[in-house]
Image (tube, rainbow, N blue to C red):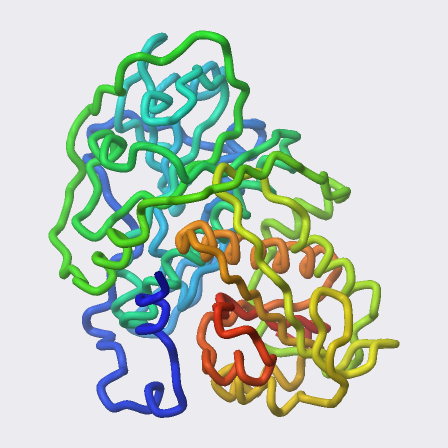
Length: 427
């Protein structure tokens, strides 16, 4: 089951192997173009439905490191490579004509790529084919963008980034007073006929932000035209991993939802100002802030294939909490392990200046939903930290087996993701 996870582990030796450096002359394109003749809808923040799309993935800042310009968005991505693309179907939305769209995050436009009518739509690819009035989001991954820098580990990043985008949609919907739920069970082979993906672009998940009606959808959407698809080098390892883990088994549904009580103006600021913190203030983190972050991450996520994920933390600078290892909010081993935490996160110095290093672990069977949920929980960590005025940084690279040994984890538990939090330092 975990063969791809095993083969993408980091060790002290592997990260120092010559040849593991990206070629910046071959930097992958960051945006997917479509034919200029396709209909477009300019999105603006004054419209509720437009905001839901914009706040999910739009560009909010740029950084220039010659010869490359990075476009930062409301959702984080490992190395700012953004392998995920966002599509959506609008039905019964006053300000967006019915149809299937690709979101252009740079120009804040929705590009119409397929027509739907009363009895057609992407609902036909779902288990429940009832018509959805509102928005249906589709998240895909062009994993080649991440493979350029991260090699085999890009398989993990592609899924974590998709989970982050799902979390971003959750908060965008929440701000606009909409509910959302995650789907992994849909016809992935069928839906690619609508979006006409790149060779290295694969559907990951869908998010419903609409209301189901009684009538059923019977027919597929009608694509308008093909995108300007450019052939990309394929990674056999990653493609085979996706193929191996696409089948789901023993899925349990999560229907519980606990609404996070967040002030709307502060939530908007958190969505738009979110950044990965690289400099932390070494002052102690308030205990209640740490608890708020962990509790937000632990809230249920409505999903058709939920998996259990445990939260382990190495605390070394939180007020009124003994330094040591914690599971959820309960201490399991005392000691100041600040230097160990930094080492486990590939010796990143910023971890020492933070207050805690959080690890998400699981022994679930459905790998894609597991990693996706870890990214979703990670996004809750980001937004809650931003909301509280803290700093947060996702860390997808760590010494896997050494983390497991240090935390004394059961051998069946996989270490999925790490995040460090603390008081934000000077930018």
